[in-house]
Length: 99
Image (cartoon, rainbow, N blue to C red; front, side, top):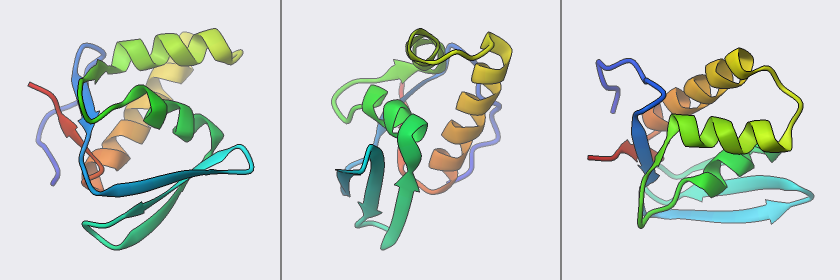
Protein backbone atom coordinates (compact mmCIF):
# COMPACT_ATOMS: atom_id res chain seq x y z
CA UNK A 1 0.00 0.00 0.00
CA UNK A 2 1.51 3.32 -1.07
CA UNK A 3 0.96 6.22 1.26
CA UNK A 4 0.66 9.80 0.02
CA UNK A 5 3.00 10.90 2.76
CA UNK A 6 6.65 11.73 2.38
CA UNK A 7 8.82 9.93 4.90
CA UNK A 8 10.37 12.21 7.49
CA UNK A 9 13.17 11.43 9.91
CA UNK A 10 10.73 11.39 12.85
CA UNK A 11 8.33 8.94 11.20
CA UNK A 12 8.22 5.52 12.84
CA UNK A 13 7.80 2.09 11.31
CA UNK A 14 7.55 -1.55 12.31
CA UNK A 15 7.63 -4.90 10.53
CA UNK A 16 4.44 -6.60 9.41
CA UNK A 17 3.91 -10.22 10.35
CA UNK A 18 4.25 -13.09 7.90
CA UNK A 19 7.88 -12.91 6.82
CA UNK A 20 10.46 -15.67 7.09
CA UNK A 21 13.91 -14.13 7.50
CA UNK A 22 17.33 -15.77 7.47
CA UNK A 23 20.99 -14.79 7.34
CA UNK A 24 22.92 -16.13 4.35
CA UNK A 25 26.59 -15.30 4.04
CA UNK A 26 26.30 -12.00 5.89
CA UNK A 27 23.22 -10.89 3.98
CA UNK A 28 19.61 -10.96 5.14
CA UNK A 29 17.12 -12.80 2.92
CA UNK A 30 13.38 -12.89 3.39
CA UNK A 31 10.32 -14.69 2.08
CA UNK A 32 7.05 -12.80 2.41
CA UNK A 33 4.22 -15.21 3.05
CA UNK A 34 1.67 -12.47 2.29
CA UNK A 35 2.86 -11.74 -1.26
CA UNK A 36 4.87 -14.93 -1.99
CA UNK A 37 7.99 -12.92 -2.92
CA UNK A 38 11.63 -13.52 -2.06
CA UNK A 39 13.86 -10.56 -1.11
CA UNK A 40 17.60 -10.23 -0.67
CA UNK A 41 17.94 -7.28 1.68
CA UNK A 42 21.73 -7.35 1.54
CA UNK A 43 24.02 -6.46 4.40
CA UNK A 44 22.90 -2.88 5.05
CA UNK A 45 19.26 -3.67 4.31
CA UNK A 46 19.57 -6.47 6.84
CA UNK A 47 20.82 -3.98 9.42
CA UNK A 48 17.80 -1.78 8.71
CA UNK A 49 15.51 -4.81 9.00
CA UNK A 50 17.11 -5.67 12.35
CA UNK A 51 16.27 -2.18 13.61
CA UNK A 52 12.61 -2.75 12.77
CA UNK A 53 10.63 -5.15 14.95
CA UNK A 54 7.06 -6.40 14.98
CA UNK A 55 6.56 -5.52 18.64
CA UNK A 56 7.65 -1.88 18.62
CA UNK A 57 8.45 0.92 16.22
CA UNK A 58 11.60 2.76 15.27
CA UNK A 59 12.08 6.13 13.59
CA UNK A 60 14.00 6.72 10.40
CA UNK A 61 16.28 8.96 12.48
CA UNK A 62 17.09 6.09 14.85
CA UNK A 63 17.92 3.81 11.91
CA UNK A 64 20.25 6.46 10.45
CA UNK A 65 22.01 6.80 13.82
CA UNK A 66 22.59 3.04 14.00
CA UNK A 67 23.97 2.88 10.46
CA UNK A 68 26.22 5.90 10.93
CA UNK A 69 27.74 4.25 14.02
CA UNK A 70 28.56 1.15 11.95
CA UNK A 71 29.50 2.53 8.52
CA UNK A 72 31.61 5.39 7.19
CA UNK A 73 28.86 7.37 5.46
CA UNK A 74 27.80 11.00 5.29
CA UNK A 75 24.59 11.76 7.17
CA UNK A 76 22.76 13.25 4.16
CA UNK A 77 23.59 10.22 1.99
CA UNK A 78 22.59 7.84 4.78
CA UNK A 79 19.27 9.61 5.30
CA UNK A 80 18.49 9.52 1.57
CA UNK A 81 19.29 5.82 1.30
CA UNK A 82 17.33 4.89 4.45
CA UNK A 83 14.25 6.82 3.25
CA UNK A 84 14.48 5.18 -0.18
CA UNK A 85 14.78 1.71 1.38
CA UNK A 86 11.88 2.34 3.76
CA UNK A 87 9.74 3.56 0.85
CA UNK A 88 10.47 0.31 -1.00
CA UNK A 89 9.60 -1.78 2.08
CA UNK A 90 6.33 0.15 2.43
CA UNK A 91 5.46 -0.35 -1.25
CA UNK A 92 6.07 -4.09 -0.88
CA UNK A 93 3.93 -4.24 2.27
CA UNK A 94 6.80 -5.49 4.44
CA UNK A 95 6.63 -2.67 6.98
CA UNK A 96 3.90 -0.35 8.22
CA UNK A 97 3.62 3.16 9.57
CA UNK A 98 3.58 3.11 13.36
CA UNK A 99 1.01 5.20 15.17
